[in-house]
Image 1: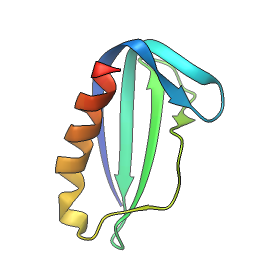
Image 2: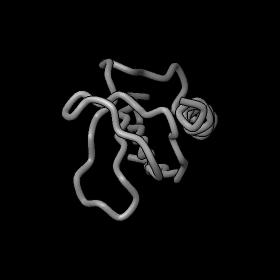
Image 3: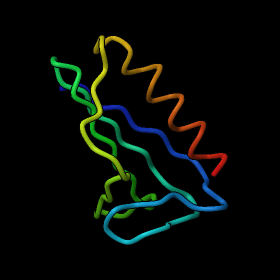
Length: 80
């Protein structure tokens, strides 16, 4: 399972399943397994508790696309 993380600042916030909208300096974690199953989580930088992003059953056609998808998500969430 491959993991990627990025730190970004969300001034307008990011919606999470567990606690609703969070904002500020956040860290995005994406994981992708060999089947292309993608999971998305976010936390406050330095915190231990991770929150899931809305949606489910994310799957990449090719797991090699994980890096590109991760970078796109981090960029879009930073604009939030």
